[in-house]
Length: 171
Image (cartoon, rainbow, N blue to C red; front, side, top):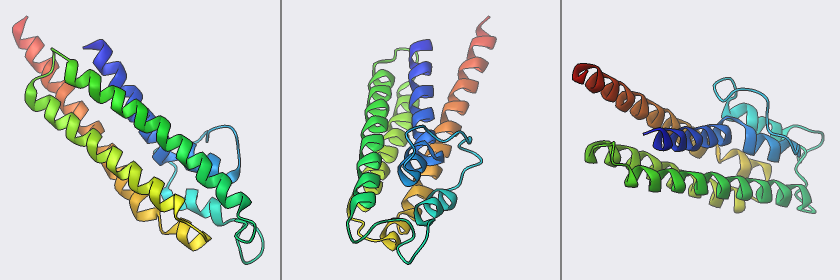
């Protein structure tokens, strides 16, 4: 179970970083390094507010030239692809696990599939953005992804507790 546990932790962490700030915050601020704040202290509104920070009516996003907007879109696309790849790898390892029951696999697979779907929605919304208002409209999708990450963490915690409970009664 250690391999599966590690892969789940990596997938949840990667998704948490995307939701919590590493992907969007780096894209929004133009920073090459990920955000140093924890996923629980960052909020989607803070991240998207950083997109709109700056001077002038365009709020730091160069709508006329599209250079800053296209850079944000490219960074978000790269981050979504990376996280989706990690989630797919985690899902493959969960499916191959012999230590998880079919119900546990189904629960985790459903959570991961929902997260991948939401990531795709975020990617398409950001790719279709032409203004800062369009970027701000991604907030509900980011909030949905945050809820999905919370759900996956809760499900993994429940599964771990059930495994610990079962192993303590067997010894």
